[in-house]
Amino acid sequence: MTVLMSKTSFFRKTVGGITVPTWRTKVLVWVMPVLFLAAGLLWLAASFFWILSAEETIGKVTQVYKWEADNAIEAGETLYGPVFSYVWTDGNETTASLGMSSPDFNFEIGSTHTILFDPNQRGNVRFPGFRFNYLGATVILAIGTMFTLVSLVLWAWVKAIARKRDLKGVNP
Image (cartoon, rainbow, N blue to C red; front, side, top):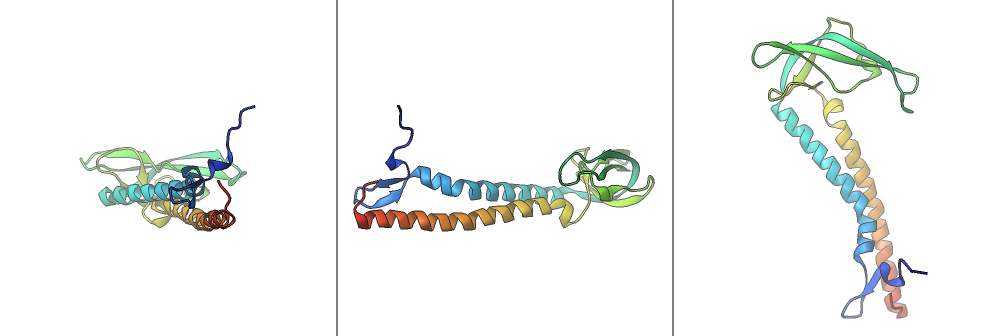
């Protein structure tokens, strides 16, 4: 029978004889906060730079896609995905969708709304505002912050275990 993890998997002794957490322990404690915080910051930066380069215009609803939600959060609701026509930077009219759907997007054909578009790329448009541009990244950052708080408590616990091992003279 092969032993996959020995007692030394989570702690090791330094040259000076002090018990410290191994790299495995550090990864287990810190990987989730680092991943969530990095993802949230990248998403926030991407949204920020997209907004910086975006231009605001008035879009006219030309079509609204409609379907039933098939996820647990919006089960039983009807989702709508509007398509807007707007004047592109070259003066020609073009169409694009939001790339998202919502029960709130049941707009009348012909209604106009303020939208943002990327003048370097045709395709998706966005509504202005925090909810449509920064809310997702903020939620991921909040989750990363909660994971960080949990990891700080875990790290203090791991360090306390290492100190107790030193006081008892236990080898990792």
